[in-house]
Length: 166
Image 1 (cartoon, rainbow, N blue to C red):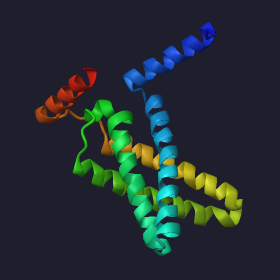
Image 2 (cartoon, rainbow, N blue to C red; image 1 turned 45 degrees about the vertical axis):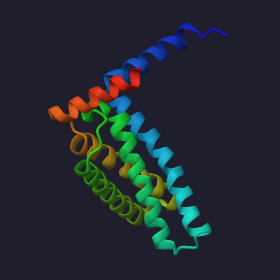
Image 3 (cartoon, one colour; image 1 turned 180 degrees about the vertical axis):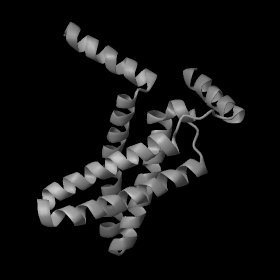
Image 4 (cartoon, helix red, strand yellow; image 1 turned 90 degrees about the vertical axis):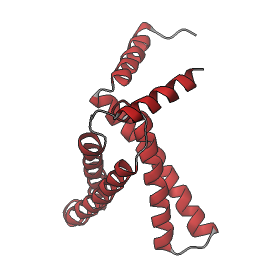
């Protein structure tokens, strides 16, 4: 069954936006990776807490570490691949993890401040939105900001790209 011309046009626009890494494409990529990492977080938490019988806080810290690490790797390779050349770095990882901690603190603050006035569901939704805006902004403008990749990283990225084409 053939796709309609409208669907084809939309798919071409999405592909073009992704190729150019427009802000909207980055937001969608960042959000999609965030959804995947909720699944990573919950799965690792369940394994640590239910199967390994670890206490609540260590289970949560371990699951957060897995989720932030996978989020960093995917965002480096995909969402901000143009800025990073797809090259992972300890410095960017630490900045990304720090931004995640700041986001969690802001989300908690928004939740606590709004809950008495707006109710828990609205406060939670608002806190998630606030954390997303903060985390994306920090990733876009600080952690993965467009900077020139040093020549060694550029050569490595080019070599990996050529290897994948073969």
